[in-house]
Image (tube, rainbow, N blue to C red; front, side, top):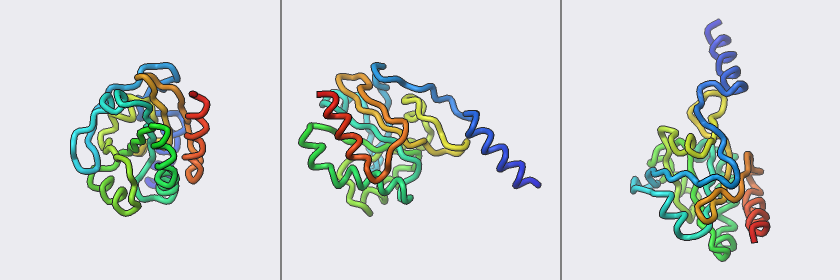
Length: 172
């Protein structure tokens, strides 16, 4: 009985958005000036990245899971092309820095992964959790000139790089 009640509660929280403080950020809004730590535990200031050009900030639920791996590797495989467009890529999940480091090394990801263990970065971007769990929903944002220029509220994991490229082309 307890398990059934707990499951119904989690599902209800996820469906109705309880347990999350995230207010959706819209295209045209100022990009959040948040800070975190990268996979090596070093401070990471998003404002510094924004100052250097167009930035893709992509949120994924959990490092080293099938969908998140497909998404991260899609961006890895297109990294040279995206970098030629002067795009900086930043991955963010609620994992700890140590899990981010293992994920980055295992799949040879060429971009930083930011640990958002307390969910403050996801909250600043308006990225909700999933079913009341401490994971961020899969969402992506292109930031240009300090403003959100494009937003994807979901991503086709293995084809995410193509979605990002199409958004970049539309910004030109």
